[in-house]
Length: 336
Image 1 (tube, rainbow, N blue to C red):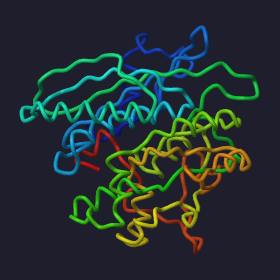
Image 2: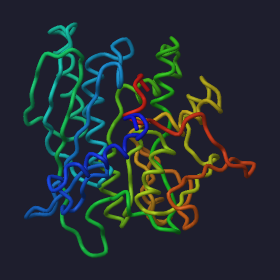
Image 3: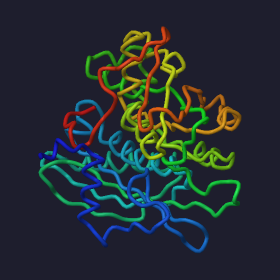
Image 4: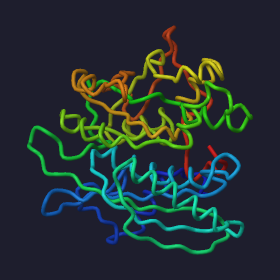
């Protein structure tokens, strides 16, 4: 068996098995969710780590170093948001490739600083080295307060139950559509601006995650790998089936205008990196989260049938299978 045969999550399970007693299995949330969590005097410490590598997660000809810094922060803050946690601090490890200039470093720091100000988190330290490839690895730390028995302390991938509705924030596929427009030289079109911004400057939905917790929602994940693949993580962890009505998926109207309805939908289902929240829970609680600033749309339901699987239903009642269902970190090596 080769590494590519396993896929990202099977590889993680294999590594955890080899760690043996070194793997922290007795904490509140061990490996396998958007972030790890353990108890503290006041509640829970929540922590996550993510890496962005040039050529895999970004290219210098599609975004500035300031945008790279922003996105690195957003990716980590989004993981904390998906747990319903309050972000606090970041540790930033920076790898500087041979062609990185001092001006590039300035831009990277500027983007990190701007993202921190926008998302309510601060840099507490880190590391910086010269390397063969440019990249960032950020560890993000947050907290969650203890709550009553009626309100969960953390959002979990394993919290979905049959009968729940499925909802998503924002417009799914906007980031992937923005990248397509950049790569095809159409990013200067007046309608492209929100899509390009979604790709280069996404925002972690911290307030939404915390509001969901307060309303008793128990399950969420951030949409980073693609809608169907991320819903699959919920289905597998919760041992449920999920059914999505494609007509209800909130595709950005600019993506439909510039790329066509079918291409925009396929990017929504498998493009990834929107960093919107996907949630499951009661209809009333989910719709109470819907605001003018951050719309929340019902797109499907959780069922007891076909556990671990996600089915996408087209308007004609047929099952739709898009060209790709999402991103796998160990198999996909080109920029998304």
